[in-house]
Image 1 (cartoon, helix red, strand yellow):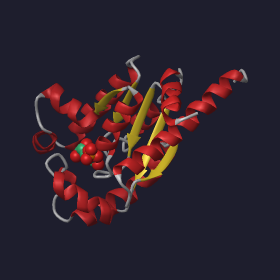
Image 2: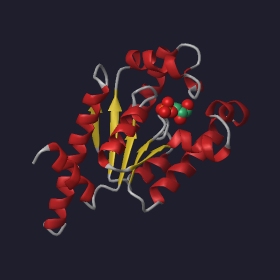
Image 3: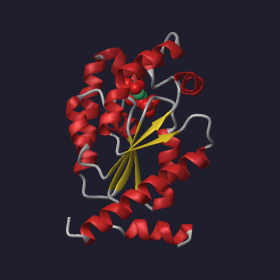
Image 4: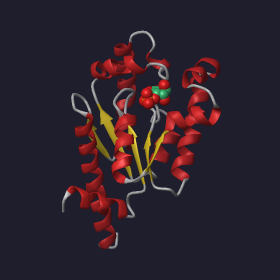
Length: 197
Ligand code: S3P
C-alpha cells in the first residue's frame, strides 16, 4: 500500500477517532498536530486556543488573575468536552495536561495518546519564541523546563500509547513518525476486532 492509500485506510478505520498529542511546552504539538490533522482529514483542536476563545482571555491573563488552579479547571473541562464529543479529532493538549489524575483517566478514553519528547535545552530554544502563553517558564526557561519535565515524565509515560522523539528532527520527520505509530495502532485495533477481541 502506498502512503496515500494508507492514509485513506486510516481515515476510514473506525479506530481513528481521538488522537491526542502530549508533551512539554515547545515540543511542537500544535504545529505537528495541525499538519497531522490535515493529512488525516480530521478536525484539529488546540486545547489552549480553545480555552482562550471560550473565555475571551489569554492564558497568561488567566494565570495572573485567577492562578494556575483555575487554569487547570478550565483545561480539565475543555479536555472532558473534546473527548466527550463524538466527532473524530486530533487534539494538541497543553504541556500540563497530565498533571491532574482526572485528566490522566480521561486520556484513557482516547484512541492514541502520542507523547512527543525532546530535551529541555531544545525546548527552551523554542519556547523563547512563544512565551506569551507560557507563564510557567518565565525566568530561566531551561531550568524551569528541567524541573517540570522531571515532575511530569512519569505521568506522560503512564498515559502515552506511543512515544515519538521530537528533538533534533524536522517537523516533516516528526509528522511521519507519528503517522507511523498511529497507523500501527489502527491496524492493531482492526485485527483485534477481527479476532473478536
Ligand atoms: C503549560 C503549557 C502551555 C499552556 C500553559 C501551561 C504547562 O501549553 O497550557 O502555559 O503547564 O506545561 P503548551 O504546551 O502548548 O505550550
